[in-house]
Image 1 (cartoon, helix red, strand yellow):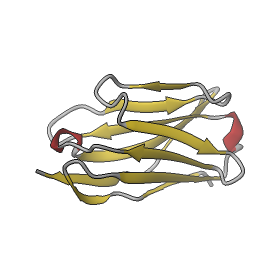
Image 2 (spheres, helix red, strand yellow):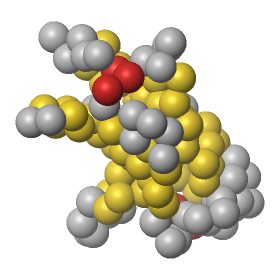
Image 3 (cartoon, one colour):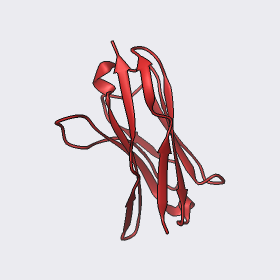
Image 4 (spheres, helix red, strand yellow):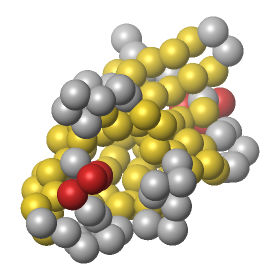
Length: 115
């Protein structure tokens, strides 16, 4: 059974930091491209940051320079370090794993930023 379990969300003041984690099980983690998405109330889900099996990364323009994605294949975990958080970062953050024809999602973790 495949599971992606996000953690690390919460409430933080503007300018603060959070570190999200997504622990995967039931997959060969190292071959998957891992991506963080977010969905704000009333908005469509959007890509935040992704990291390929080789470690290449990409970021949404809105988070470049503030967020950093990384992965630890030994722990089957992907991280999202979020610094200088803004109220516009408020959303549910989802972890996604893709390889070949397989596509898995986590249940999401809420991030709230107070101004």
